[in-house]
Image (cartoon, rainbow, N blue to C red; front, side, top):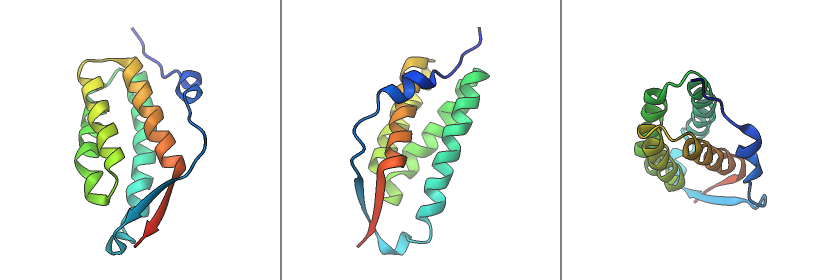
Length: 115
């Protein structure tokens, strides 16, 4: 069976485009842009992994997000990573799509404030 990401469903759940303000440690200023760029790459990798039914890859990426998000000041990424990890473990595509949409939405809306 081949699995596909349902992008129409993924983005139909979008919330209003309110900004999400993230107050971050100024010492992380040089690291944050790369961290967020890598999460965007993770989205693309997860989409490809859905197409190839590579749930282990999704679980591995999600586990990494779960562990790293809070360290960079992004607890929502850690929470989404945790949920994605569990969805991949039980091979629940609907939940994977839901949490992938949450991650995408967060990355689109987050505004960084270093204080």
